[in-house]
Length: 200
Image 1: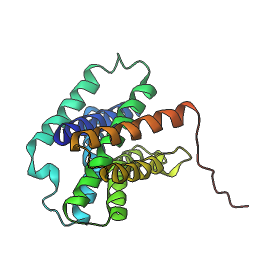
Image 2: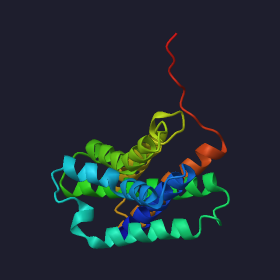
Image 3: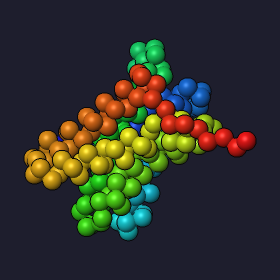
């Protein structure tokens, strides 16, 4: 289940990056680069921080294949994604839920404190999108009013609470990712925002 979620998250973020780049009218190479950094950016930064080198996607060529597949699918079916913003949002949300879990698990595997694990999960989920938005000259979603990183933190808390119940790992992973995805969908539907801080 964990490996499957990792593959799904990588493809979802690759498609999210590709759709963003196509929306900015980049050439095919530019679209691929944005898709690639969106998929691996957060995980690369996480692996460097915990001293796990070479980083994950360099150890397993399957990640490259998955990203290329996501890139190709995004290009082939771009006309079917007639509601580009809705498609981008959906893929980004799936990636958010899955990559939070991956970061949490990496932290647990090396014995880090739960708070640090949650920080790693948030970083893994968010920073590919941060790099994507910066390269596409957008203010990153994580820094805007939309609830984004906060949902990853909430998902991390839910994960550690459920973990105390000794649930099967597959159930634990699936439930946590569904909580993150569901909360983000509801946050957008019901327009839940964090207040902005303004200098007066």
